[in-house]
Amino acid sequence: MKHAATRDLYGYWNRLRGARIAPDRVDIDPGAIRRILGDTFILEVDRVPLFPFRLAGTRLCAVMGHELRGMPFLDGWAEADRDEMMHLLEAVVRDGAAVVVGVDATASQGQALELELLLLPLRHRGSMHSRILGILTPADIPHWVGICPLVRLSVHSVRILSPGERTIVADEEGDEKHAAPPPAGPTVHGRRVDHLTVLDGGKA
Image (cartoon, rainbow, N blue to C red; front, side, top):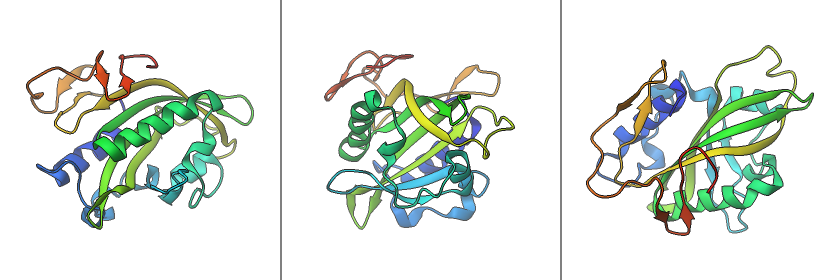
């Protein structure tokens, strides 16, 4: 995880869950993540499925150029990437995985922007199949953000963290360090994870 906001949300979520696969929705205290609250969101898991935004932070709505609440999460993605994003969302809901996605975005006037997406499972009323916590944040904030909305998101890279894994995060200088010792057994990289094969730095 390259962005400080992504690491902050993952660390908060990881502390809340403890030995559980995921924390409960009611465990989330907005005040505890107020610094990054504007970039965070909660998705609803519906039957269609469209994964509509249940809540979306003000900075995220400004970056996208419109209010996101009630809008389908998959609407903003390039058509070629929607199936992959659907599989990743299902991995969060079904398997309790945490997913980190490198995102390439295009704005309305053709500007390019790099973002990092984190998707985390949440329990809600005893179910693992109703909510997803996430954050979408740019590597930097150019002057046109909030003026020229993002119109297209595409997948640049994917990493899936299994429920028992403690991730390796990158600090602000880009050096990697362990957040906690990894579990025994094979890592997620380069192996089959249910219906997905995850390779570092590219699409599966």
